[in-house]
Length: 416
Image (tube, rainbow, N blue to C red; front, side, top):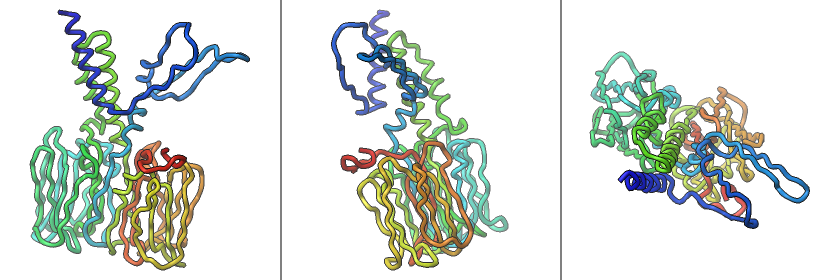
């Protein structure tokens, strides 16, 4: 009975590990002759990815090898890099830019406060974990409504209406609850995440005496413990008492779950720089084609007029004015954009991209207010750009995350 129970745990644990990491592992070899004592570093991968090699050689053979490894969870991150997406921006121009990108470090969204009158959404405040964000919007008129999410509850859909300002916001959760705020008239919008099993992670937009515009950032959910699912997953898993190989397989499952928690904290947003007006744009969906591999920027002597990015080997939509001087830059294999700076006033006047290889790619004219953006987390790069445009680029924001492999790359290109 004891051994039959033990083997049942082993079988279940192996199945769980397979389910957690579908179609990712492979093996090449074995190369060489027979003889000697068998060895495998399978268990060492729990300690992390390969970070160094030691090999002892003589003039004929490799006589010894020692592999030192650190945190394996980052290996699983590479297997699931595409999780963050952006919806918006909805509303009109004007107001001062705001973003809750840094607030997600405090945990998931657990409550929302909305100030509203009979015409508009006046103000917004969101609780992340146990910490309330800064309040944005008007403070004099309007009624405050407040809702709290249940433990494990997340927002999976956001809709509403807008004209010059935001008139209505409505949220739907994974528990089936709905929270409407404001009046249902104006232009309608409906925002959902691009990737399955992702939820609303934070808000951005612009505000003055009301909420002028709003955007929604989606990614994997995290727990309320300072944005970390690791401890809760660990405690729940360690209550399962397996023996021998069953325990080892379960540890692999925990490692995969931990990696998902780490992955969920890798996206951030910087901006939006410039002014309101124009039509909102976003390259969020283009990231499915792979990492950024090229960019086209159109300029005149005063402003940046238009933008286009290549993801993998596919060029995205062009946004902006079809006139002006067009510049095109292609990134080298393995090169990523790690910093963006520039200048803006009523429009975006200059934008400068700095890459992981140290290249500086400059467009436009250095006049106006300066900005300098980089990702919140190490090891992340520019995933896509959003903003507003008409005959010029009115404003621009930058979305950072783990750089994905290229889905449509040809052999020899990035991600191949």
